[in-house]
Image (cartoon, rainbow, N blue to C red; front, side, top):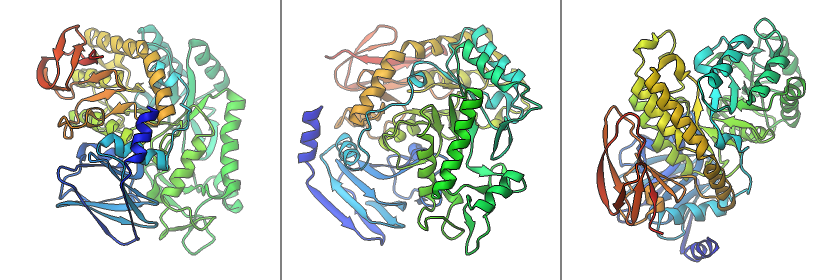
Length: 529
């Protein structure tokens, strides 16, 4: 590995630095580009005529980074948020601040990523807690929505055990608290939260709670903290700005203010001391609520993505964390999650491309949303008999061979006995893979390389650039899940010798058609070596 890094360093053959105006990146023959935003994975590699995306105003509900990489070993790094438009013959990149740096690190997608990674977000040698990789994560959102309460949370946890699923990390989602910014358990719904957390610990769960960077403006907490100057201010005034988000209108913490940062950290630490909370799901932090034209900030410079970065920095103060919005946090030991996907085949089909994109931006420790999707409207008030059970099962299979696997909708509530058995089997398969996933996470922490890898990343020069429905999990497993209602699928095998999940061996360098009944997740082990 060291030899490869040295070779990559020697292959840095060109460097071009552009100013803040729009720059045309002319593509080389056969060159394809990836990067910028995790949630654009389905559109990668970028095609001419695709929509413009602007990372200052929009993170597409997910992780972003000022990085673009190509299969010809080139990388673009912008030292700030930028706007990008795929055009005929290349890309147009416009930095909002800073410069555009184009470098050639070698001749492959891996060369481009590794070179840029070592230059801008080198490995930290730290991983999130091993529980994330070795056992499933469970989130109470889809089952309870805004009715989080002690009785039903304990019932959900007991049902996990009663139905033979492994214990793991359990997240208590939004509306457990008194109010936004008032981080204490709502007494009417949680008569004894310490007893609840202790009970969950005895069952074998680690416990996380949902938090956000907002405070209700009409609350006593909001009025008191406004006087302290802890919030971003309405442009040109000394008044706290009221920002719009999916749950209404709130004050937003200005984390560039060291006192505000320390105060919010102390609020979370207090929950750990009082109740034994193990960690936090830090939601929101999206850049569009901190635009310079709308608000003023304490340090005069931490607008848009910089507030997103500070939110992730706060998350890093608590090792057991989950983030959905991030900026330039590659190789930090935080657990990321894909943004909420719809309960649909389209939503399922986005999981693999987006996970690949996350890896190419340095976000190795990522979870593909919640099994079946995290958009609650798809589940709210729906008769369990009308759920598409195949969709839930296929989503579960995709999660099973990802770094982190997360349940929310209770499979025992909506699945037949037969389909529940399939999901249980894949939850146990994920647990069985736990030692490999932990080992792979440590490898990523040492080298900075993704856990979930694009086929062209692992097998350059074999024509995999447009293949985004299968992936490599480290060097060992090629995973080819089904993300539609089909019972067959084509799998493109790289050169070499491969053994599938049923023990059959294949000569690589060709496409094979597989029969994939609902209980099967196709994967292949590289046995060439």
